[in-house]
Amino acid sequence: MRNELAAKVVSKNTKRRHTTAINKLDEFRLMNKKKFGSFLAFQHLRPDVIQSYKQHLIREGNKITTVNKELATIKEYLKVAAKKEIKFKDPFIVVKIKTFKSTRMGLTQKEVDRLEAYYNSPNCDPSHKRLLQYFLFSCYTGLRISDIKRITWNDINDNIITKQLKKGEDFNPKQT
Image 1 (cartoon, rainbow, N blue to C red):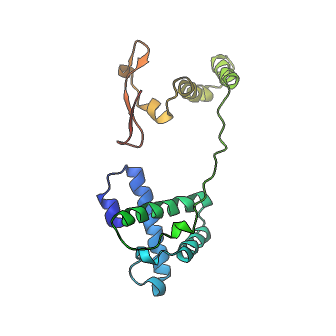
Image 2: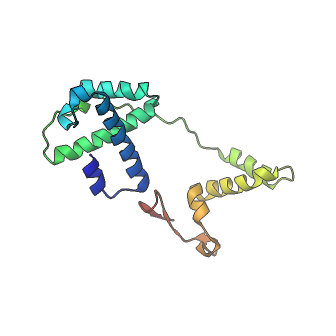
Image 3: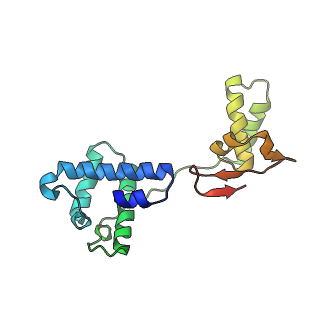
């Protein structure tokens, strides 16, 4: 997994997340050194081992969403190993990674209008004004706060923003 990650071209955040997943798996291996020895092979990752690893992560204080992300990362590397024709039985045929639906809800136009009215009112607390300025701009443009922070006056021509915005550092450029 470490060799594959080193060869991959991924964003800094993805590399960090995958490195963390690999380190946690290695920590689990070290705690079970008698069982696995000095090397944890893909063949060792049977369903019972994955379940044991999952319980280990929970005992270590990881939230279930974090546990599922760690398992999804392992599953990703197992797919790469299968493509490279490394022989093992896929434990994720038995062990399922749960996904959770988000409970986030968007604001209604009426709610955005109320925020704008507060922003324009003389009663708007100065500490709220700057935050609302960014937030309302984001509401009306659909841009992420991180992108708004990168925009300069040179990027705005005739009320049109012309900037190559990038998600995740240097990856996934999105023209707006």
